[in-house]
Length: 139
Length: 139
DNA sequence: TCTTAGTTTGGAATCATTCTAAGCTGTTGA
DNA sequence: TCAACAGCTTAGAATGATTCCAAACTAAGA
Image 1 (tube, rainbow over the protein chains, first blue to last red):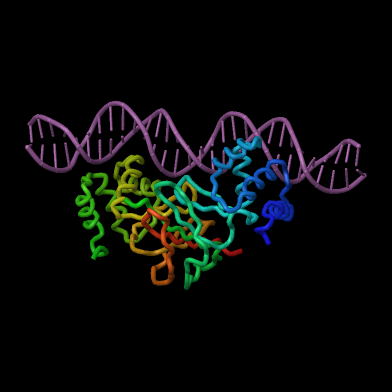
Image 2 (image 1 turned 90 degrees about the vertical axis):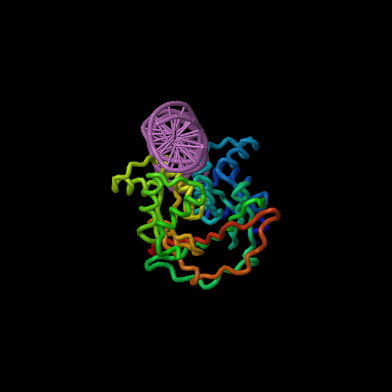
């Protein structure tokens, strides 16, 4: 199972996609996948890396996040213009987004049903279905 | 019905929200609501305004789009970091987004079902449910 | 008409992200 | 083991959308 050894799994996945397991990518994979499911921004990851004494440039953070997303290790969740999260949970699931706090919370696939998906426009294939339930702190 | 006179309706709505019907807001409302349902970016609206010989600054375009969104005349659809559309169709509906072309297409409420919405986190109210089906041009 | 609170504006500022060109490093094959 | 090169990383500049700012303008009521 993927869940058992997410970090080792990540390395395997990198290699099989022809991505070299460099010091930076290994360190970032460790930060991203060793703590279970999480939602993180590029800026946050950069800060965490520095805290962990891993020297990585912001450019590399962005490169890595996008490469990981391409090979299916991460999911990008866009919630606001100029604010996107990377989700280490790549299973089929949805999100609550709190517009006041910026907090993003997973919704298990089981607790929501999206039925009768319409046919995509001609000449296109469905890549993903995003469901974001936008909430605000109650008054 | 709203649909019959969207422009007049918009003016009424503005007034009732305490927003003055200024030259700029009226002109932008006309551009936005007289052509039926549409998806438009700030930049596009600015260009259209200029083409129509309406002198409006970009700052005002942004102010106006956000004010209109707040009073419920527009819906903001965030599809990519740094790219958001404003939708003049504020009825309950969803979207196809073509990641290759940037095209956004409406999906009528009738042709998709989102059931069994889970309870929102404590202390929050649901504001909106966004469903974006991301597609790519088939190979 | 006068007053003033609400609006608009150009331009500067901001912010996340991407680009660039140069230097570094895994990996492969001899 | 090591040379050679494709792939990586990097600092800093560039970009692009959006927001901010302080000054000038204007709608609306007295």
